Length: 121
Image (tube, rainbow, N blue to C red):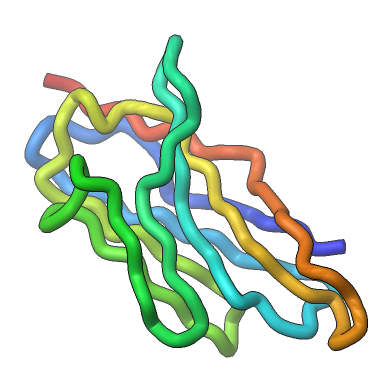
């Protein structure tokens, strides 16, 4: 099994910046994809950004140009640099990983516990 531990959430003023980190640990053979999702109060969980092993990225339209996802494969860590934050970015941010524990296994999804980001106006 793989566990994901997030850090970096907190309270920030509108226009400010924040960086989230997420580290995967456990039995890991490879992690083809990692990413961030978020869930605001009363809303469904939505994709924020994803990054695959080949460096391909995908961003929600609402964060393009403001958020940057990056990854340190050696550390099994994914980052989300958030800038020009807006009150509507307020949400619990969840880390996601799609991983294989061995070359024989099927791919599995893992989720972090979530970290709260609050943007004040």
